[in-house]
Image: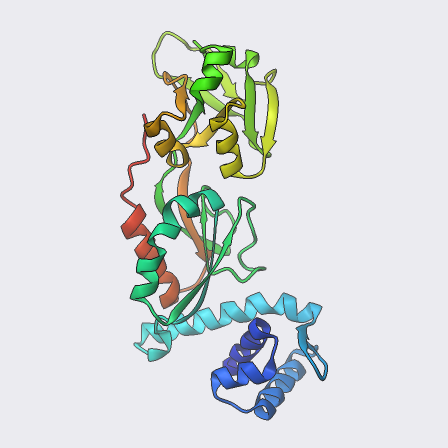
Length: 304
């Protein structure tokens, strides 16, 4: 299969214009159209819906797109291994991460990265909802779970300690807690679909088993966005469990306080950079991973 035709197809999918894709690759619209028709004949299906005014992906084209991108990544990686200039740091890099983490730690350092690689463009998809990297054509993702999909690889960025916290106003209104069993008497804020996590005593005189949220606890607020959950906690809506990196500044400023500091969350999570498996990384993904590791890999997000 002609990889240059695949590259043309990917460009058409991005611009929804055969002419524009052809110009990007330095070929005429007629030649571009002929190459796409040949590719469709090889595959035995229409990848595009064409009209006099626009181009759109067919259902088959949408399904084929992530695999076409992966083939090109493999080609670029292979050429990089023998020193080809095809693997220059340029093009479009699609990156997904949680909105909360990106706002706090990634967006502030992006200008430096973009200045360093002027031929590279970034497309950010920021959401606490996990997306399928292959299906959505994502080059790199930041997640707090290691890749379980056999088609993905991961590199650890940092540890991800969780703590319980509440606002001083909430504590003043509802009282302090001595042990996790007191949680059933409080208003709880939880992240959507979060599993119960064990709370382990840091002192040896309490060997009871606790979880957050407790089975009989009252969940007053259920959120699907980490930033919103933290803001609700700062506003005094209840007690929530947060990654320490997301609340470190709030605790430092006093807008949040740690609850039950003698109990640690038994959750050995970490922050991972996850990417589609390839024999070698494309240059654009490799340099962004290296940049994030340099800037964030040594961050102190431990409040033990």
